[in-house]
Length: 100
Image (cartoon, rainbow, N blue to C red):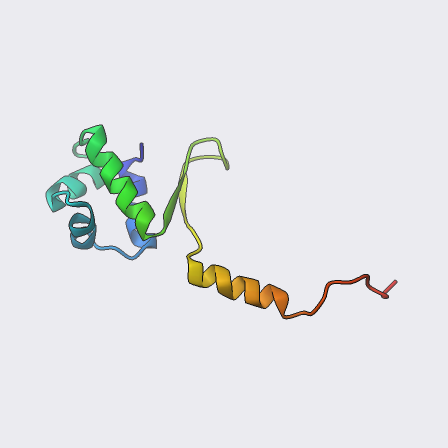
């Protein structure tokens, strides 16, 4: 389960307003605001829906201990993956270097 701070940070990364997250998740704006401000903790089902909506938008939640603590990052989308593959393949065939 994600925390309110992770929810707020993930919203910022995927450039979602509370209104947009509410629309995407079907969760009330006031519930999201209370969760992010640590004023109330919604039930696990609501938190799971918020997390799934943010993950669909491109957020990846990092659990505690995996990389030194909880966190959030953006995943690559298909377009970015194709561009990276194109850039990696532009150097020609990989072969042994003659440079000592």
